[in-house]
Image 1: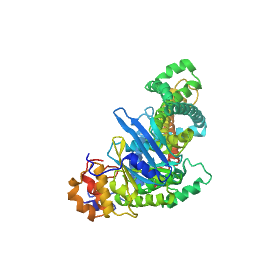
Image 2: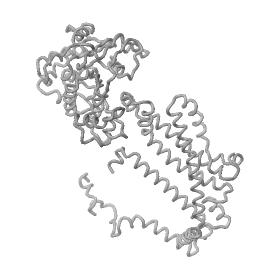
Image 3: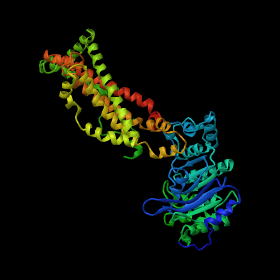
Image 4: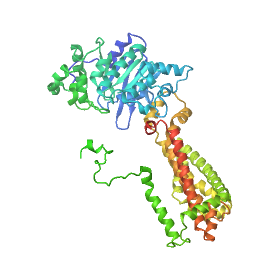
Length: 291
Length: 275
């Protein structure tokens, strides 16, 4: 893996962000061992309240394990992990309970008197009011994922964990969902950690990209781009190259696809690059090794 | 033939290789062969081609059915049989459910119960009749016990598998929502295992009738099985066939009941929603 561009180390970035305030998530020296080596190897990470962080890395770099640890789905045997009580997770699959209507799915586990009203409000926010009484198996892929978002949103999370939530959606639905997530993030300002394979998605949504390698944070790159962001902006393209380099993708090999990437919107190329549930990289990175 | 023409099935021309359907309505056409067989059967017996001792004519069976109904004999035996099946089912389904919950919801329960029950289930339960007679005598107990034993296993096996195969991803997602263990079991695990339970219940009902047939031939003094056994002694083939028909109808009704339950309980399944 070549690191042609300078990168900010994890510790540096921590000090960068700590000027904002007390982090909502604080991970120190996290180690997770699966028998054949450490999946997480002394990882440290802070997330600021209301920040939007994208977590990138090759398959098997430990990013899913990190997300699962932050969701308290996996144990943290070594190291310290400080988390807010109000957490919510959206997975790649909607994971709705099929025998509960959409509204009941959203309010499940919500211990408040106005749970139903809040559930309806959350469904309205994701544009799914008309499906509140529907059975989950009758929803389309995008609708189901929006219901999953509402289920997360209704808990008023201070930490929202998104585990490749758009990977299984078709290109158009994915674009809409990305827009929706950005809107919801602005409205409710949870700290968001988005695990993704998609460099463009990270650059569209996040204000910080964290690249993981070998169970550690290999690069921590701020994304100071103005919103709304476009794929063709010079700043976008520069950051894209840098992120790809961090991920070990040699852009020289992708040169042939370069015009396609800049001329056509990313969505068009995504249709060819990404398969639902697959790990295809969008845009010019389609020829890259699996990330 | 292209797909477009193949869909034009209303026209007589589209299925050139079949003979024309004729003018009879579809329902009547479907009944034609069974009706013809009935007529043939009636005629064969009437003309003396088949001895009534081998098989009586449909009209004789109908007459026997009528006599048994009018005399109230059929109702009495039917109630006794239904009572036995209900008692046996209640015990068997409860035992199967309790065992499946214990083994399905905890590792320790599985270690304690599963191996034992998997061993026992390979035993054909009807082979236990001699043992049951020695243990329980020839009263109601061995008959009910036979039904209970036979029905417990399909319930156990299906519910246990159902509990263990509830979508782990959904369970994981729900576990992030802050439900208590019991809420999780009551709202997610058990409803998720319900389709498997209902499949088990259907099997159990089939086994229940089979066990009843065998059980009622153990020195019974009432019940549909008893009706058939005494009819044999008096060479009343017509009554035997009435008993068989009653068994068949009971089996069909039981299946129908489970279907109705499924339709109401599994309303969330797309197959049911579309209808």
